[in-house]
Length: 466
Ligand code: SF4
Image (cartoon, rainbow, N blue to C red; front, top):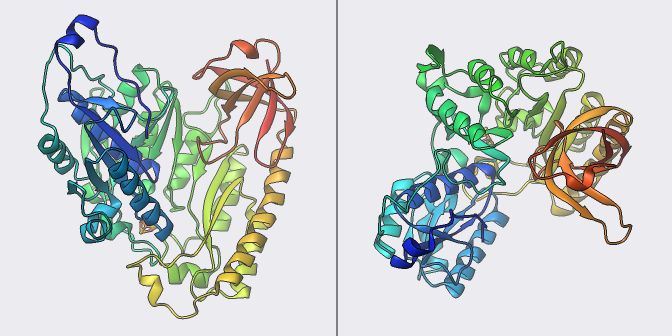
């Protein structure tokens, strides 16, 4: 179960009243994690306490993921476990869009609500265990409750998606794009930074499309009218005292302007991290067209080359799908050649899964499972060598590192090191920097330090504290 801390209550007051406790199991992507945080923040403001165990909870919420068939199965298993361990279970999230499937597998669940239906989840909790509100005790910090460590947080700028990629069912689960007003996003971001967050990870389904649905509506921020636009948002976030990392960006021409914020100033500081997470999914024009990917007609290769020229330290992360229906050996080789040319830094790869309800399942040319596995292995080895080459270039450089885990001793070698990340590493999905040297033993999570890179592995670095 998700583990979060609740404010400590004065013993006398706490003894007077036992507030109902809610547990949450949060599955899926960072966007789902943000939904869980919102649900918990609302419940906490109503007086509920948060339990980090099944046994201590009066009711358990399972926030499901329905992106892939394997994720659906994991969600169903988690619901089963929560029912067995606790008995009172409310289901929400992506799989909640299909309540029949959940009720068929687990008829004992109390309620099923869809993604982003925060009010319905909260109403279901009220019904299962009514709230006992006490304004003296039930304080919620202005930044809300977070499931991430204290020093980084996800910042969700919109819900839903206007694209219709043929392998994806997110738009049918989460609907069309709905952008949050810029002011709302900035207030949340500022509160997080005030509360000690050192890194904000901007997430959505399509970050570069931010504001399209609300016609880039202006809102008042710090006495100025600012448009709800990707570039404006990046500029405002860049004025906060935190690392700003952009995820789920598509290579549209207007992204070029944001690159300017990633170039170092005279002091070597950048407004936002020189890092872009662009889910390319493929490179072959035939496959991209069949996938109906956003920006598939753009001259991506040229664009990346110009970005790298402007910002040599730019880290590019991406994900790909191999074995998409109709992908030929030529298409696959085109992808490998393209990888050689763009030399991405961080890459994830999935074998195509025919997700129930996805348009791509109707396409001809299904790739056989053995062939998918073979392409996946070739892809991973190909990219590993690229990654190794790029990582080796970092040896000897001085980089900034945000510490994630306080120093500890390696049982085998006796070396004391802390674990952190550089600008090139998003939490959970990228690599780590292992920091050693004099002073490393006192490092704590959230410390920002300078490190000289001593060695590089395929995905991680080893560095010495300066
Ligand atoms: S951009 Fe494509 S893959 Fe991403 S959520 Fe939208 S439809 Fe799905």
